[in-house]
Length: 363
Image (tube, rainbow, N blue to C red):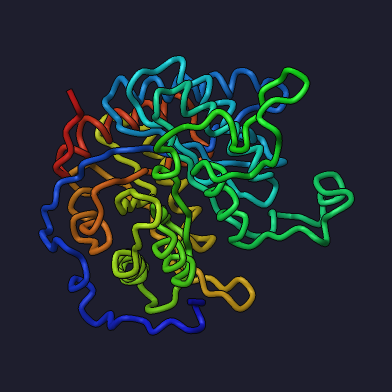
């Protein structure tokens, strides 16, 4: 069913569609998201800092760490490589991407990398993906797809191909042995269970329903389509409810939803840090964060950044219908802060904020 054919549910009571309406529903899985920025003159330091931050997150008890993919920018461009390195520095924390755009990727080759990393990590990979024409495609399409740029299919068929490769469908047609070499007809290595940990970053209701009907997990972020309301929380809760209404067990997994918001607790921040954090939030507010913006025919809405003490942020989060409908979060770290800032924010999230939301680190 396409988004044009969809009959939207009644959203006058947005608490009616979730299986558990308890406003004190415990937060069970705590994650954080980083872009992994670096100085182009010294990328090694920035990438190493990202690895150190992931290790620090595990020490604090975080359940997951996520990387945001950035092509042709000064951030993580090869998340599977960085996650492979992180897997050898950590023992428990899940490692994910939120998200890897599939436009610049070959689904079969990416499946090989994902399966390899999942095996190296002991089954801790949680890859999140999205589709669409690559950002600023006209500026680098001749380098990316010099012969096929106009023929490339950037639709959700790219996700379906990735699923087929991760699931272990037959994609090759070879004799089992040829010239004394063994060949397989499925992507190698095969990582059992990885396909059940595949997430899709859906921004619209049509994409959300597609995600559910294909049995994928749902990543919902701080930027989504404004299709049912001018209020971010109403849109996001409606998105989550739509996903749960239409989820279909095609892959043998269980439906998971993770919410991504920007939270900046200041419990143990210095006066200088607080001033810089507040200036950052105010700047983002002036450029449109927290309100509806139009991108061509689409209306998008962003969640306001949440800044303050953990008591203040917890009260705001518990007041959000969308937050009350999830058991997993991946709080996004601001892009332009310094290493000590990130450590203070993560420490306050794990030590002050998350316990107020019902979370406790696993033993």
